[in-house]
Image 1 (spheres, one colour):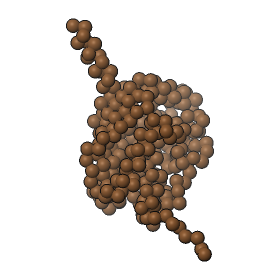
Image 2 (cartoon, one colour; image 1 turned 135 degrees about the horizontal axis):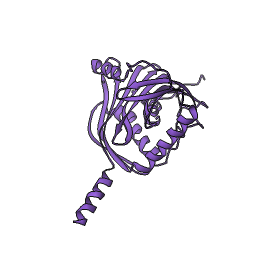
Image 3 (spheres, rainbow, N blue to C red; image 1 turned 90 degrees about the horizontal axis):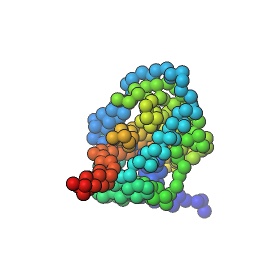
Length: 271
């Protein structure tokens, strides 16, 4: 008897979103007009300029790794409003989940849902596993070496470009191995802080049978002295399902609240 594909439709949907969701989470996806407006907001308008002569790839790597180490040492906590949406290209929102993500160094994240709408099935099989995976990865239960480092990538300088208020070095990132938790694409790095401002790319390895193509953009913003995610957009071509999109908005950050609270308490006690 010829072998049959026994994967159920629900499982196919889950596989699609769980595979696609890594793009928004490791590097590091909606009303029709609103979706294209969001996409336009992430397009770069400024021209690419020549790279200054004094910059080398080694320097970019060294400064980038030093920035990441400093961030890990000084970012003690944050809260942010997260909005997750799964949409099609006609603008239909299939599912939405809104809530507050709270992080406490070094390895704790919690997510509290404040509102939901759309398909309960898509939320249960797609958005909930995505959020749970991020929390588990932060806690060290799922380790994937996806850092932009010499062990994982070769960088080729392309020039300099303005990304909103930030002036950036632009490099092409080529992964050193076929790994679905790595990407191939371009990275924009702030010329002052050597922090990642933007990433555009696609997985270094095909995600699954169901994902024919996946492209993502992640944009960062500077909150106080920290660079934190601002928006993720992931567009995925799914076999039999067509093109779908996952967007994640990160807003209303409060950073290092525990430090501010401790300082206020110490000042109060000193009076």
